Image (cartoon, rainbow, N blue to C red; front, side, top):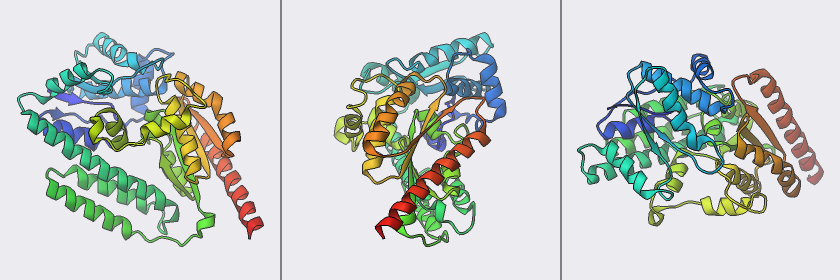
Length: 366
């Protein structure tokens, strides 16, 4: 099988797992203007930004020879639940005859989930499949830990751009890993590389911590969210996201006895504002805002694709959360016409506001 997948976040993980299951993997190019142009051209106008970006990405992968697409589904009012069907129809009309394997949460449809695993496992034993899944899960957990670390220290780097360069090198090293011994070695080397980054000393009171929440694709894929984590790092802010791939796998694919998740706790924190499950990540978004506030974060940036139904509901309750929990929240709506300079100006003004408020509070307390 020539297998591909949507380009989102740390793609070496999807690549590694599919390679370990014996497939020829076609990694789609990182989303670019060409990807967006293709996606916009062949997508329905009403479709959201992730749909269009992924559409363009699929066309590029099909051009490279992909015959099977492995992706995730959706549930509730979120239109993502229909996207694989629509993507497949559009690709067929364009002359690409590709199969889709769509993974929803294991807990929503166990039978279909296992059927999809059987399609990908080929002639390998279940033991080999379990070993491959465990290996790649451990790999993404290590990468996510290093990712978090990188965005905690980036605002204090003495050499501008060095942490970004180190993070790219770390990912390249993990991409070469095929055994547990090599994984251990890559993890140790990654830690040493981060520890060797020269940092400025900043008083704890002057540090600014920003949480990023919202729809998973725009939160996790830097090429379509204006590389917001790096932008915030350059503006002197520590950053943490509401979504990491290891957490998504943990929450949606692992049996309950293997789970180490705070997902239920986060959703409970969102319940006073959104009582029922409405699809997408709306409830998770509002729960995370409360969670970030309780952890001492100074502000929140809420990312949503233009026209995203669940995140529109989140946006409507955010002013109430912001007032009740006394935390500033900036919502940015993203689509193919997003003006990066305009959004950067809004982000800079938002951070200035937080910095000045914190400075006044610190000065008054002192």
